[in-house]
Length: 480
Image (cartoon, rainbow, N blue to C red):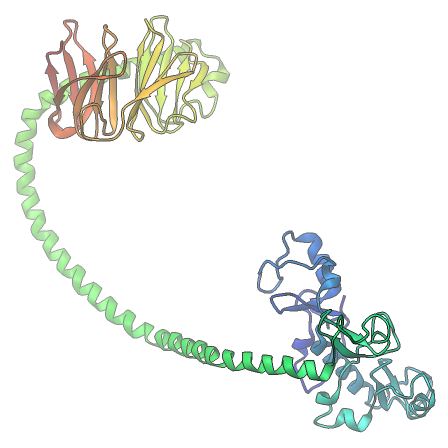
């Protein structure tokens, strides 16, 4: 990972710190988003993240084919790290890294060997044939104000370790040394060699142009920050003004409400007198609902008397039951709106099977034609009637949303007559329509008062009784 040492005062120590391990960079590598991390930290990060995200900005990045090894090293951070180490080495008491025991301490830094040396070792270093051409930075240069700008880590050829990279092959798009130009990158039609300084200057010119493009954007962002700060400073005065306006507005509302209160008291008196006339109608509606409640009571009674402990306690059997139909053999079918299905139950309340799961969206009421083994279910949201057999298979569906004959608008209640015709009542517009056994439209019986047909029943003589939820009444229609 990274190592910790005291950075130079010339630059911020945080700039040399890896955001992952919070130590000084070791072998810093740059991601495509231009954030820098230790090579080791990135290798560990890759094992935890797929796809790889930048630990700083969370941008998804793609690694080269060589993985983390293929990422470019941050040469600028490397130079700063070397400079910090070299400048610290130039301080009193830091031993020479060559002879180690020299008490005079280190006085210079070899950029080629990346080592601190005392004066004696520096003198010998410059005399050896293998190191006489190395770039050695003296203590005076390190301490000088411009020392850091002159301090650079040298790059050597990966293939010819002793040679520095001096040329750029524009054909191969790679840096090469003098030895490479003799064999692998001999100048000619296949290789065009240019001195690194020339290519670097072109790159710097390009970067300078980019910097000029960035400056206007930076000014825009700075202006935006100031605008936000200005809005923040205006927030409290605006809050006080808005609060005063709100208080005045709601005080006015209170006065209006008190006036409306007087009017409502008068309306209540009148409504009470009118409600007395509607009580009989409401009683009839309640008696109609009693039919459904009786079926539900039968189900609960059978569950209490005959259901096992498991069946009684079993969770999620029913969540929002609406319509119910009881078969001649005592079995029951319940439309559960929240579970979006119908439940076929034994007389003791135990579940036989779930019907319409994944096909129904908002089941409301059910009616069973036992002669044909067909269960009809109204779907309030799908604006359709679905038909299943009691085995759970979807046989067909009919209807679509609309106001024309044969179209439906939030179908609510359903009933099958002895001839197999299907009678459907809409909650959306109050229409009561009849469909033949082959699902074709037969006739519209009526549009009920209040526009909400909430229940349908058949009288012994074949008339249709419709519960009108919004009209607070029952309506009877002759039907043939």
